[in-house]
Each structure stands twice: as structure tokens, then as C-alpha cells.
Image 1 (cartoon, rainbow, N blue to C red):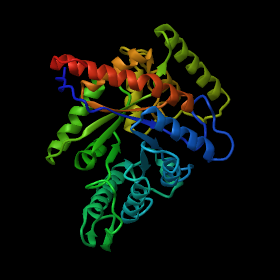
Image 2 (cartoon, rainbow, N blue to C red):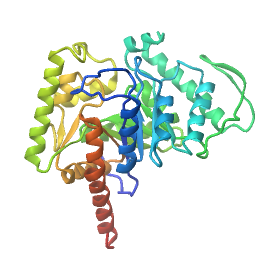
Image 3 (tube, rainbow, N blue to C red):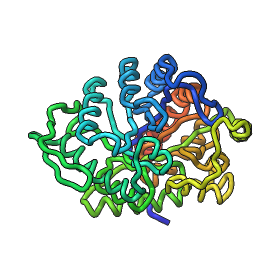
Length: 372
């Protein structure tokens, strides 16, 4: 068993907002953008004490940077983690776009780099590169992005995918030296790029054994470049006042997902996923619906692990305990969202986030021999 790292106070919670109400139990309806729902969701996370909110990337979805700018205008402190796929715009224009968001939001921008794990979805936007080539392009893309962000004079670049002369670094970020880079992807090619570039490496909700293994691999990659990075883990917490009620709620959600899928509202999920992250979730699900502790994998299995679909089930205090078990393995960031997205965000802010922070403070105080 891998040695646990020393406990630290470093703890970050990231939620997720959608441009309209939708989840595995709420098929999307109406226009692609509901500005009022987007505003309400962002404000719920802002009031609830979340550190950031993720805005995802989908080949059929609205532009994430513009959604973030709208949400920033209606919030005060919460940060914005905007998913971004390299290859669909020049890295120089992306550098300016993200720094523009950082300026307009007064230093609340971050980028979540996802190279794309599904050939069909990539093709919808005209990208025909294979997976390893996509990560090679991402590697070069981030070289350019970071060079522009840190430059004091115009940037030149000669590479395989990009040739640039005199890129302007005039549009700066509020954050120094640059905005944070979060990175997703679990293939060997992805881990190599993460080791070079990521500030935070993000993975989906896995067993503790899986987390130990991939944390060790990513750290080894980062060490080759003299770097250290943080780790993020994603879950769908299912909470109730008692443990039995929480498990009953989890089973009801599973049955609702089956009913929705039976109506073909979410589309077929019969093909095996191409991305390594989904494959890792299915490996965990193969161990059983409850492979360890509070981890619930039945929903990942039911949906083909098409995204962050593993849950932690229990009372807020029990799920907080589970968070700290992962925290002891080196995870400092938890990206959480519910199946009732807006309502669950409110509940997390009222119960789960305070419980986790309080429990961490108590454990740190106990180790140091001082009152919490």
C-alpha cells in the first residue's frame, strides 16, 4: 500500500453549472441556454462557499467562456474553471480569451484542458487527429499558451502544429504569474503532458487503490520536469439525513436513470468508451456496485461511464469522512455535482462543504495538539 502523505489544510471544492437544467435524470429541454437558470446556479455556488465552478465543453454546447463571463457578472467571489479543447482555435487567441475573462472577473479564471477522448465527438468540430496525436498537439499548444502568458515581449514559435511570429502578450491576467491550468486525461500520453504542464491533475471518482496508483504515476511524470502538482477527484455525492435513507435515494436515482434511458432520452451508451478515464470507472464498477466504503459505481456501469458518474453515498458527515480518506492520499480538490444540479448545489453548500472543512480542521488540530 502506498504511503499516505501528511495532511494539509489545502482543500478546494469545485461545483459545476450548466446553461440549462439537465442531468442523467433530467433530460435537457427547451433552448440550449437558459440565462436565468445559469445565473441562479452560479449564485447558489457563490453563496454555498464553492471555490470554483466548472463549465464543461460539449460539441453541441454553447461557448464556455461567454457562459463564464455572464455568470461572473452575477457573482462575487466564486472562480470559474472553463473546459477547453486545444486544436479548435489558435493557442494565442485562447491565451487572450482566458486572460480577458480573468480581467473581467477580477482574477477568477482557470482553464481545464481536455484533449478529447471520443473520435466521434471530435469530428463534429472537424478534428480528425488520433488520440496520441491530440495529446502531442496539446503539449505544443500549452507550450505556446504558457509562453504568451509569461512573456514580456512578442513570442515566436516553430513547431509541428503551430508556427507563430510576434504573438502579443499585451492582454495580461490579474492572477500572477498566470491563471491555473487544470488537466484531464488518463492515458499514458495524457499523463506525460500532465507532468509537464498541469497545476492540478483531475480524475474521476475511483477506488482508493486506483487513486494511489495514478497519483504515483503522475507524480513520477512531474518529477522528471522538477515539478509538483495537486490532484482533483470528481464525485456525485448522494446525501440524506441517515445512511439508510441515502442508499435508498441512490437506488431511486439509479431506477430513474434506467427509466430515462429506456425512453432513449439520453441516447445509446452501448459502445465501449474510448477514453481511459471512463474505462477506469468501468474497472471500478466491475468490482461491484459498492466496491468500498461509500463508493457507489452502479450509475457509472448503467451509463457506460460517460463522464463523472461515480457517487459517494451517506450523510453529509459520512461523505465528508470519505473525502478525507482521499485527501490523505494526496487529493486536495473535489469536483462535485448532483443529479438534481441546482438543488444539490444548495444542499452541498449548506451541509457537505462545512462538514468537510470542519472535520479537516478538527483532525489537523488533533495532530498538532491544539483546540480546533
